[in-house]
Amino acid sequence: MRVTALCFAVVFVVYAVLAGIRQSDWLSDERLFASAVSCAPQSVLSHSNRGAIYILQDNLPDARRELEKAHRIAPIYSKGLSNLGLVYWKEGEKEKAREMYHTALRQSFPYAGAMENLALLYLSLGKPEDARRWLHLFFDGRDSFVNAYLRNHASR
Image (tube, rainbow, N blue to C red; front, side, top):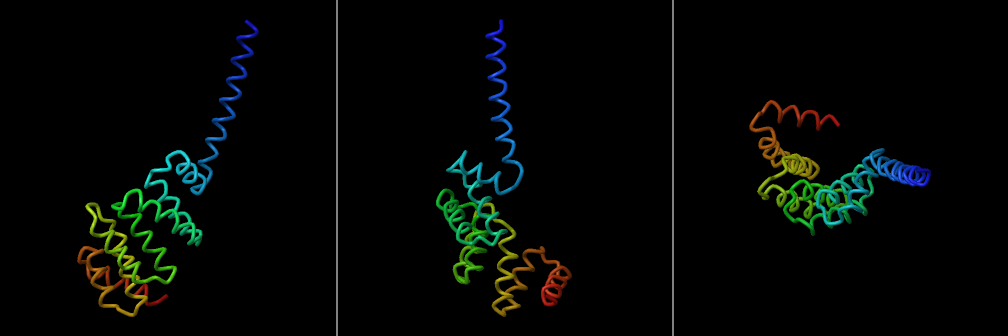
């Protein structure tokens, strides 16, 4: 009886420690997505989300690495393509960024944020009419939204 109880206690303690370690993955987005990548190394979502975290941290080399890996795994994941375009833009490769946004929008399930990214890219290039065209699509033809967006961006 004592041996059984001791074995149960040891198993319980080991399980509790492992569960605690696993739960710590939820303490931050970075830890969560790093854990997801290690658990599912062929998951486009894991790599794409980890890349997005790196973008938010302004860690462009790691963001590029993760998002390009996601692109190799599933070259049709629109949000990942848009995020990769964002990395290219931040690195100064504006033409590659534009191409990546367009690629994101050509997918079966396009990520609408790529339209806003295109508009912002065109604004940065001094092409407000091209930006307006993409914002018009992004805001579903609502000119008041487009105008408010452009006014807000001009005030920055």
